[in-house]
Length: 250
Image 1 (cartoon, rainbow, N blue to C red):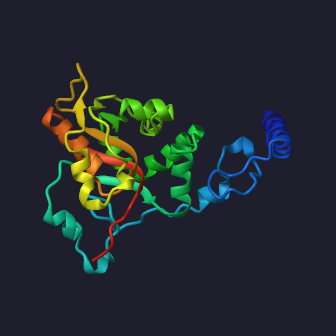
Image 2: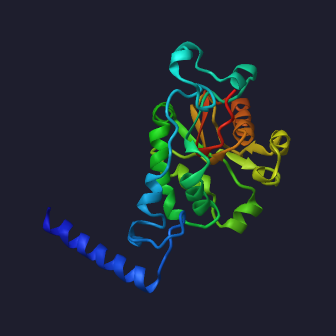
């Protein structure tokens, strides 16, 4: 171990001890005291507790599928995606919107722990490595100006900045909508219909785009954004989120 590294480790350990005693910060996920607060507002145990999606996944929406033993790779699309048409070529997420991942997203989104964005985005890069490699730009889902003013930031933008692709603020939210989490699934598509538009002087023609957001529930918001981009001439449009509410199998 090099001397500078040893020196920095000693300083970090000392800082962790002082902060833990003086400020007594708690993990933004499990709410237990943070043993190493200099490493961020969420403890390593909660990061390790994230359960990622693992193949086989629906080639379209990213929901888990049954075993490959009963599904051919040529037909690796869930029943719901076979029944509907979508403006999105593919959707991916780190894992299901439960447990530690849900708590971390909440700490970022509602707790204002913006320092979580780089580490969360790193996990998103792993989950969406193929779509990001082929993307020209990433486009965050916009907030309405009133909600952004109240929150002080857009969590989708914070995530998009750390995905190693150019970020393009291509969309604007033209009307305020009720929170999707407060609505039953049947009303979510109607809630965001015509809620988005292309920003002035934004040219997306021919671009391969990945839309970025924190959570995908029914996919209504992502679909509404993708439709606007496709109508403006974008090429393939996909979506990558931190978490996803997986649909029940069957």
